[in-house]
Image (cartoon, rainbow, N blue to C red; front, side):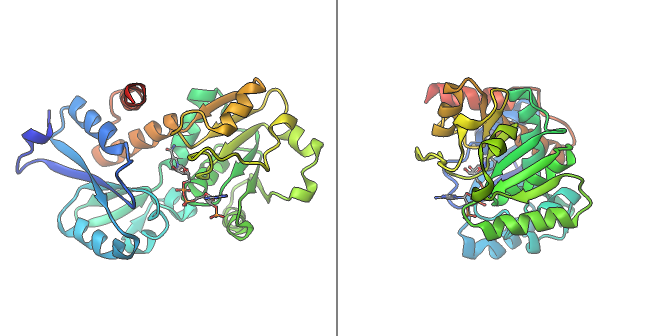
Length: 290
Ligand code: NAP
């Protein structure tokens, strides 16, 4: 078991790069999982300014860091700096996990599969055959769209502040051989019939972190069987989730996704899954103690 005081010359180093990075809970849950698995490894946060990303990646490579997470704002910018991408990261055009394989940096995307696992586990809602309204077109939405299509969603409609970014995302999905029908949200066509057809709403924007609502979403017009997922987990109950819960809809925040993407990253780095439920429990305990 490695604690920070037990780091030796043999300790394997993992980390996370982002800007800012102080808020990240990945060091907490990954270090807990390394300890529980009896691995001589440590996971550290690295604050990397956007303009210093190329230097930081060279540094991580030359220091022999065994693997690292990538978070806001580097998920797309890191793509050309890596040696190889797995299929999900290539389709998404976004990377949240890098593995250093004998000096070769390989990019992966576990955000989308983490989301799908959390949808099943926390909402009891597998996307297969469902009509999904995805809000956002940033790094998280990119990974989400690939995994929703792979999981067999019937339709994904994308609503984003910058419609051009949503259109790009739809074009990349349409260019692949996914069967899911992807479309751009059109406010002029979003009548009662449109809202009544939506089965799963997913917020993949940062709206909600500071008490913001997403006014375009007509929660009151959704069917009673709809589910609402918010990737935001701090605060645990966003305005979106409050409104959905008041209507009696099934809701979940992004804590389960955070844990699930972390478990999949741990497996990419170490070859084994961490102890079941440990990462989610670590995160939940953290918020209870806040
Ligand atoms: P990102 O690449 O920076 O994308 C941000 C997204 O939010 C874009 O769609 C952006 O729209 C939208 N947005 C930001 N400010 C907005 C505003 N004021 N009004 C309307 N839209 C706004 O970030 P990301 O990596 O996709 O992350 C998005 C969110 O998901 C964050 O809250 C992040 O913490 C969360 N997340 C959670 C998990 C998890 O495990 N739970 C994993 C990944 C991400 P534009 O395109 O118009 O700029």
